[in-house]
Amino acid sequence: MIFGFTLETFTRVHVFISLVGIASGLIVVGGMLRAQRNRQSTAVFLHSTLLTSITGLLLPSSGITPAVVLGYLSIALMFVAFLAVNSFQFRGSWRWIYVVTAIVALYFNCFVGVVQAFQKLPTLQPLAPTLTELPFQIAQGVLLIVMAVLGFLSVRNFHPEPAAA
Image (cartoon, rainbow, N blue to C red; front, top):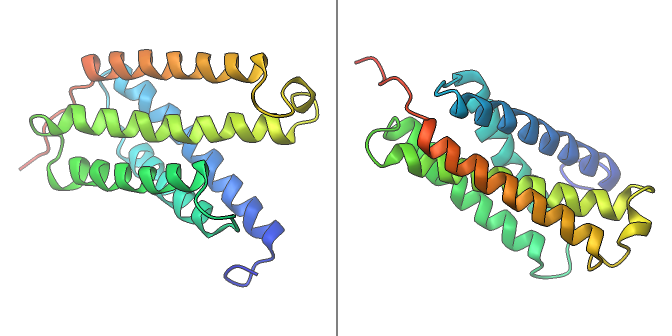
């Protein structure tokens, strides 16, 4: 039991929060590419991504795993992103710092999503049963390239309006 939930129910809640984080993150990145800021999508993305990491760390694990390390790194990234948005309001270098932290946190969520897809989906699992096979490596490579391009374009394009005084 985790917070009164069975492990299965808690895992489903964690997965739902993760999917909300990924979907809202893609909306936020779309806005960045168009030099637009959507406050609601940004808030949903930041909070759900932070909550994804926290709930992921509460799942049973056998010591320090790559997922645990990513969880802690994501929490650190979210701390910096929250500072960039709320304390520094994208001023100066905090604009690109926010973009980079947001993109990397979204990448981490998507990376874990690809891992989980290959582990759990019956159509993908036979293609990479040990997660070392070529289809898995290609999927992760494509994801990395796409996120790097989105990150580069977002840093270049995202110049939100200054906050009202």
